[in-house]
Amino acid sequence: QVQLVESGGGLVQAGGSLRLSCAASGRTFGGYYLGWFRQAPGKEREFVASISWSSGSTYYTDSMKGRFTISRDNAKNTVYLQMNSLKPEDTAVYYCASRANRFSSWSSWGQGTQVTVSS
Image (cartoon, rainbow, N blue to C red; front, side, top):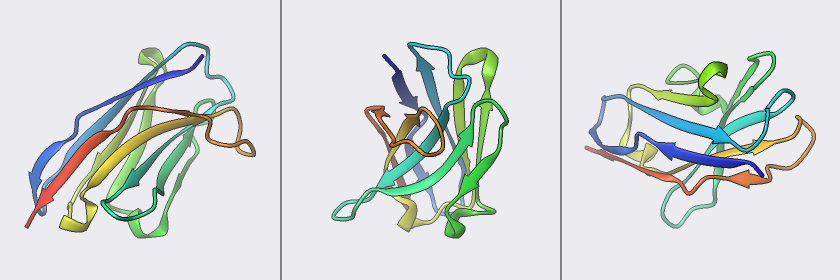
């Protein structure tokens, strides 16, 4: 069973940066995709970015390209989300998720980490 544990959230001023981490365990992730989602108060959860564990190919929501970067460290079984030029509207709970391949559903989720951007 896949387990995902996020860390790295916190309070940051607008224009600042944060790096989120997602430690993955429970299996080997050869063909898996790991991704980041976020949910702001009163809004639906939205996709942020994902990465192929095997190839490293990345996918982003258009609005976050250029500010957010997803990466992975296979040796540490960890996925990162580097967030730069943060805006108050980036305030949300950020979740890590995994799926078995690019066509399957996101089936495993972490508990989330809070990111708060002050103006």
